[in-house]
Length: 108
Image (cartoon, rainbow, N blue to C red; front, side):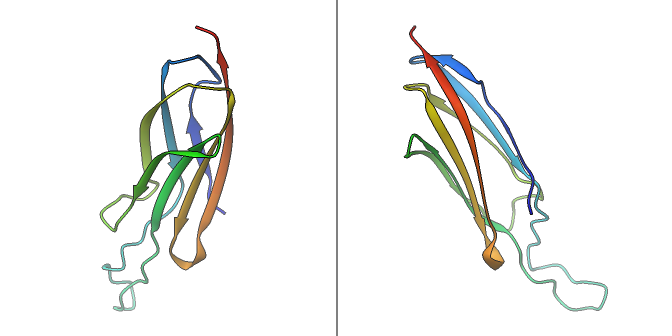
């Protein structure tokens, strides 16, 4: 099971731009490296990352072999309403991981 770390404010003022940082522990094997036995190691990468804010997608990224192990993604969104941000990572070999965080939005 992967371990994800997400840093974002617990609360914000309505209309405020907030920064969200997400990191997930994953080896991201490219499929181009040779193992100790001389054979290519099987590819095992995270292919997609998405963030939904109260069900609406606010950020999405497609990842490829050039991304390092333990991919770190940072992005911004506007705090509109209190609710849930859902972060999903999907990858090779059936890899799937989801995390949820709550954001409380206060009047400006």
